[in-house]
Image (cartoon, rainbow, N blue to C red; front, top):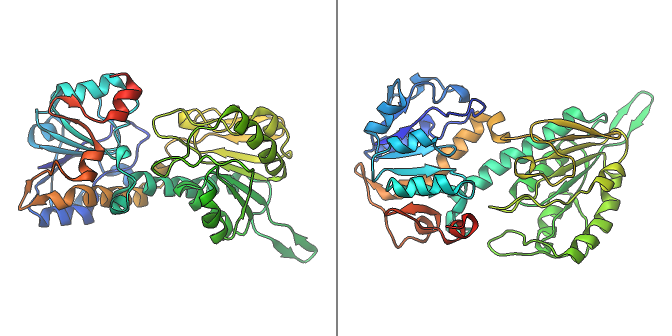
Length: 371
């Protein structure tokens, strides 16, 4: 039986199971139980889930379910209430807490953290970080456009022409590329930058100009590596010129399990035009921009720095649908006639395993958390 709890976070509006996916799971023989209110934030009525049994309390869900789908890590009290052998799947913030990882292992919970999903072709349809990153990149541009004192598109009116806003997007992962595409759709002049040179073609394919600083930080698994001090200085010098020209700066650079890299210095911010807007998508993990404060707007000289958090939650209908489909693609193939049979040899399952058999399994997590 698959269970879904109401999120303990009052700002979280997503739900990890949507009606369309519930129908697919039921067709595979799975039984479903959800806590009342779990889908309210995503504006999905309980009546849209005819396949689901609705219960009032968290305890009723955990007593019945042998698998939980979750948008975020479970609360400590919830972990204590889980039956040994329960399978937990979702965004679990595996690098965030050694205590939480040990609690999962100590409770003999088999947990799959979708943040650990291997970056391989077969896993693309399961990649929650990418689907939710696309939501974040889209939201960043809408926020920037709302705060910008300039039109994004070129505007011709009776007295002449208004030039389009110049937008610079730092980071050309899924979120950054979505931001570039959205800003282009709104008519802005867009530049993109990433320390991985192979992203140039992707940036230019979206109609943006690639900012070349001469620094390459191509890493493993599709992520960038950390830059050396000399590389950081070279990057800052050349990137600073592009930043100074921008009306809008959007930063999306992140390294899983680590503090977000500081890319935009205070001097670079102060060198921007009065009225310029900065949206730092990495605010939750320290920010890419000096002066960013999570969930706040900060004024630095004539520049406004906005540090939004949990952006996918701002568009919960679409982000929940994407999230649920990713989870189904991940675990659905292992459910047959209502029975879950996990394959210990499957590289996607093993790669995403956080805990199993009373142990923290993921080597990278153990190293970061010192376990």
